[in-house]
Length: 376
Image 1 (cartoon, rainbow, N blue to C red):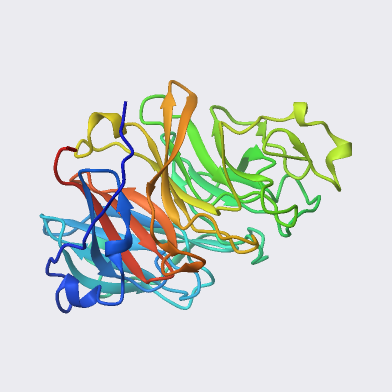
Image 2: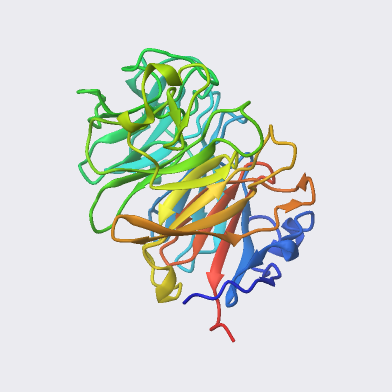
């Protein structure tokens, strides 16, 4: 059984960008981050307003980490050498509306910008002189309330694009809002994959079953303890996950719940903390972490905004047995000190060496979590 004894870890100094990690991390109290025994955390790079991440190959060797943003309106590209060390940071797109989502396919970088999906072709060769974005689609809803989008290509080759509800709680067009859509890479054949999803800002596919798992943010203004955020499992198209009628699989909405019972809908695979703002999630597909962590889901919990006592601001893990979630546990904590957060995890990504990258849009940072030695 995996031990969850916590310990404090120090940032490791590695050369990156302009100056050492120690200098760049001087205002980041990484010594406050608590991890399971054998793990450490370090600053990889400072990236403004870092949100979703996507990793591609770098022309000439190494990799490029593409990073979306929300308030910045920019998409960054961070060069990584063959050892995973950070190099030059590029701006590959700017002046966009909430370009949170980034995804790669056939050498092109896809970007979500609220109502638009854009594409930068042959991007790895054009980091210093990026091409003008090409429009893939420009007819998605334009509302900014839950309008930013985490995007990704599924094993089926389709681009998956969530569209959140344009409100806290409301009945809106079920074919246009509170959905997960998918389209062909050229933007054609747009269709609805899932409904009743209030706002998903993170998803991934099980590495063996190739089935979709996604986070969902629960509604606000029902109190501190309800409803939970959710980890949902969508093994097929056409499923409905309850919004706006039912929350957490068992809580009828006080305004809309009388219209349809909770039994009509797919319950969450794992209820998460109430108002933790679960965002990016990934299956751990690397081999650096011990066996007990392989195949687990890591979730970036951005942190609550409307709760009397703050919650979230951490990385959690969900362990599966087959298609059943059996444990939901904190993995990395410490970005919240008392009621004062100094960082807000937004996404996680497995690096080529098996370490776990974490983006933080509050501290303008990308961290790397490594497994460094056996637990004692």
